[in-house]
Image 1: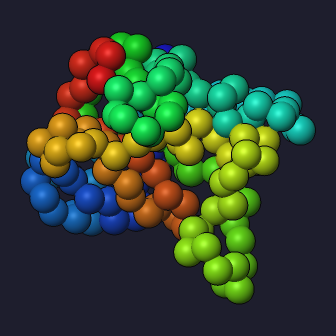
Image 2: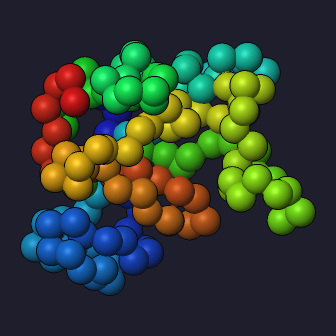
Length: 147
């Protein structure tokens, strides 16, 4: 798995302390970053093909949720994925969404389009954070395989 430390020159939330320290959390350290897989330009299945090796896309256990993203291996807390990929739409679009993510979105978005929300707050293992103008998902706690 290709993990690298995140550039620490921005504020990031520490889910373990519930604080937003300067640079990185002095008690829990920096986030590690897992990059999307590289795909050729114009790949019609970009959303699926950008999925990092430690994750899998399969039918969600949540009723009516369609596909979901699951961990193939356990991961520690403070792992960052992203940024969320998709075509940014202008403010005149009336859907309320930030990304145009319909069926045609699989060619312009990345795997993060398949992340579903947990049904209960206690089951939440990812949080969305904004960093350098992008939206990233970060593990809040250690995550077991299959979750």
